Length: 99
Image 1 (cartoon, helix red, strand yellow):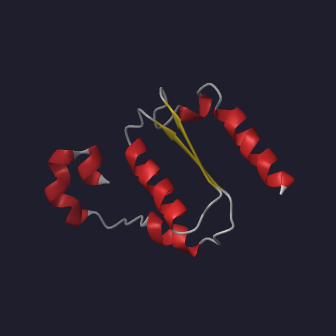
Image 2 (tube, helix red, strand yellow):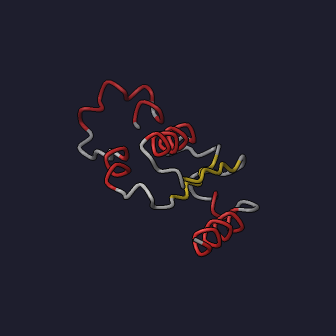
Image 3 (spheres, helix red, strand yellow):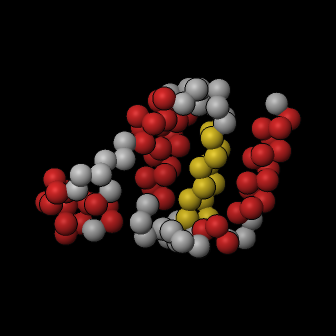
């Protein structure tokens, strides 16, 4: 994550002791579990490309019910207030409730 967000600090990533291996977390989830992944295109903390890669990984590992949506103007702290964000959440919940 550090090289993607703060490239000039890449040589010092060994100093970061927090490891968030989300691919391991995805593998631990039941493959039938529905996943909703929402991302802001302008997120300055978690690049949208990282979220999309995680979504693609989820699909490759059998999570056929993984939903991806990207919000063009969304940043890390304001994606939640972007137009259609909560509508996407509601649609996802409704789809789960129908199953």
